[in-house]
Length: 310
Image (tube, rainbow, N blue to C red; front, side, top):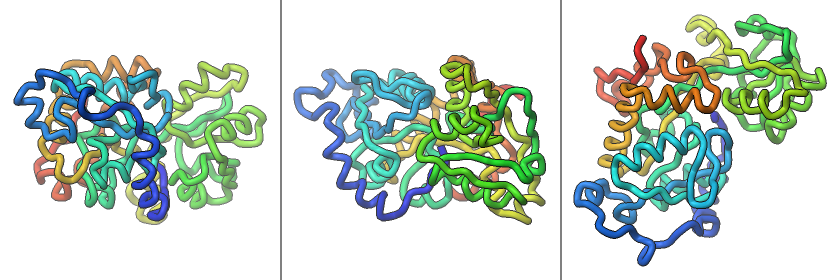
C-alpha cells in the first residue's frame, strides 16, 4: 500500500500503540527454552517477534493471535524458521510506522513501500514482493498505458499517492474515496472508468463482488522520460515492499531478509502469491530501478534484488 500520512499523525501514533496493543504481555507469556541463536536476534522479548499490523486483507488481517494474508504468511514462514513466536499488535498505518521507529514493536508488515525517507528512520528487509501498478476496470475495457488514461474518470482512496499521479494525467478527473468500497461502487455503477488500488484488493473484490463485473489489469509502467517530464508518474510504476524494523535491529533484519531470499529460491513465495490470486511474474520480478534506488543507500553497491527465475 502506498500511503501518505502527516508527521503529526505518525508522532501521535507513538502514544497510540500501547493502548491498542493488548495482544500478549511479557513474563509468563514468554516462550520457554529459547535457543541462544534465536535470543541473539535481539527481539524485545527473546523468542517473540512483536508485529504492528493493521487490518488490510488480503495482505494482513488478524484472526485470534495469528496474522493471515500474504504478508502474514510470509512472516509466519520466516518466523518459524528462526524459532520466533509471532505476536500481533493491531493499530493503524501511522501507528505501524511509529511503533517501529520508537521500537515499541520488532517489525511491521503489510505492503509497506520502501522509500529513502523511511529507511533513514528504520530498516527494510529485502522485498518480499514487488507491487505492480494495478487497475480495476469494467469488464470489456482495456487500458494499458498512461496515455490511455487521458480524459477518463479515475478513482483511488484519499491519501494514497496515486492521487498525485492521477492529478498529473491530462484531462483526467480524480475521484477520491474514504476507502476501497467507494472506488468499487462507483466503478460498478459506471461513474468511474479506472480504480487504482493495491492489486490483491482488486482481485479479492472480483471474487467477492462478481456483480460489479470488473477486471484486474496491470499498467505498462511509464518510461523514464515520461517520469522525468512528470515526476508524479513515478507512482504508476511498480514499488518494492519491505518489512520495516527499528534502526538498531540489524541482526533481525538480516535474518528475515535471508529467509525471504530463500523463499524466492525454493518456490514458497510463488505458492503464496498464487494462493491470494496474484501473478508471480508481476509480483516476484523486480524492475530495473529497484536495485538503483537502494544501492549505496541501505544496500551495498553490488546488491541484486531477489527474483524468481527470469
